[in-house]
Image 1: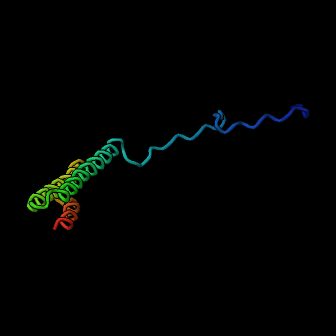
Image 2: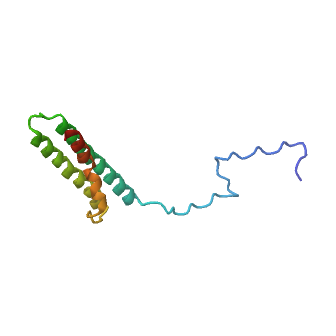
Length: 118
């Protein structure tokens, strides 16, 4: 028998393990594997870095000497090619065929540059 004058035991703190009620084992998550996450991070970094290079070439083309408009258009065309290659790099990192309609997205900075040049 327990002593009626004895104080009740203190409540068990939640952050401590209870040997009478162990925590359930975690189930494997259905999320992405480490390789998939690395692939996504690498493709995002590649596409944004190459996209910034393309946009920088467009800005350089806009500020080139206006007495030679062919040079401005040439640098803008190079920016478009680099933009398309950047989008293709994202698909290649994921081991997918780069020949998709999304490649036209790489031409966007060049088209904006042509608007300001012409």
